[in-house]
Amino acid sequence: MRRVDDESALRSSRYWRLSVWGFRTAVLAVAVVAGSLVSVLTIDAGAWVLFGALCAIVASDIAIFSGFALVRRNLPKPRPSFKTFRQTLGHNALHARS
Image 1 (cartoon, rainbow, N blue to C red):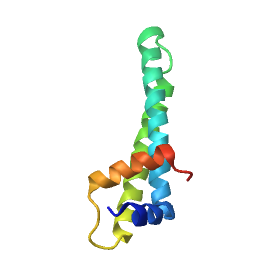
Image 2: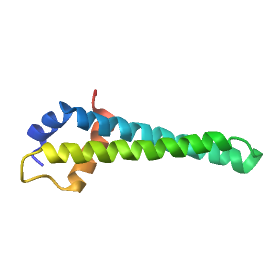
Image 3: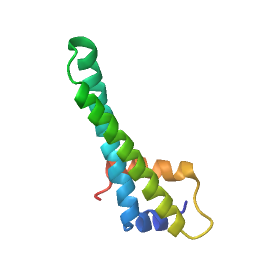
């Protein structure tokens, strides 16, 4: 992936922002799942929170994949590999201002 050109093009894409925010939501949902799983196993409370967090993970995965597919479709050939997209997504989710 040509880092400078593609990253600036990705950041201006609304589909890329959808993927980035989906990734951020998924990370938060995983933390909630871990906490509620501990709560369910120790004091038998929080099953609905666990269910809600699992639903949030599924919704976030749909957002990540939809954004990825739409961004990939709009890029000119040769398109970057999935590994490059994944690394850029992780970097943008932690460091970007979108």
